[in-house]
Image (tube, rainbow, N blue to C red; front, side, top):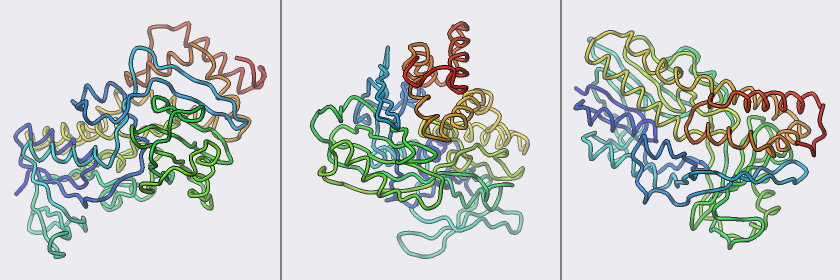
Length: 392
């Protein structure tokens, strides 16, 4: 009998398993293994600090973000007083799983099938990768961290089968030499309806490799062609392709993260990817941590109400950030004209500083109210076309 069975061994599930094992809980983690999620790999300094990510997991330290508009206008935003760390999910996820195992979690390789309840006992049924047979783990509690199309959420959480998402696709290539189109210390974000009509494309450095990709929630968009177009436009066509990956990314946090009985969901399964930016690693790991906190509370008290702590703790700190980023996406991603104005707005020094302060520290900065007022007025002016696209 386990205290907790974690389904999914990505950043969210591995963090939950690690935290619970270190607190003395009997934990098992089921993961399919061998699957690599498409991901730009960016993590802010707060993630490195909060989750003790070692230096050797960082394949690059980015000091500039370049915004590229539909007409090809480029705005370079320096990252002051710090950097954005880059990880490669091929290595990062196994590292997190290994750390959870070292902490005492039992790691099981297999595919989750269903949850069974009989004779007052909850069991997780999975198919063993080693034997191909159905196996089960008895547990007091389940954490579902099995991604955007979560089987756990679909079966156990109201609305779990209706969460909106975009499909992300990327190609990992051998990194080219430094050029006008590629800098190993710069992330390029491409806002162009020809690449993605509702999201964006990217070129993110990974040290000896780079991630080139895009995302969209619109059916019929050819993700591979769009990615090929990014590569062609930036002189990356001839770079050797190391691997190709695609997966859904959720767009909105779920309204409920537990079933009021014996299940909590976390990470992509709970929809905690930041709107507008699509950032997910930090929020996934935090989702795993608050799920572990709620699980520990429930195991100590037996109160099912304590399962609600996961969502409450997360939203208490990040609801405002998600709300602002969602409003930005709704306002600026709907047309190329709006995208052009968004990149134009990024010229502004106040916008640059407050954006990266919020990104690096994962909170809205309230220390400079006049800067916020200026940004609000400039934002309104751009949306209402009171300024030209080339002015700031």
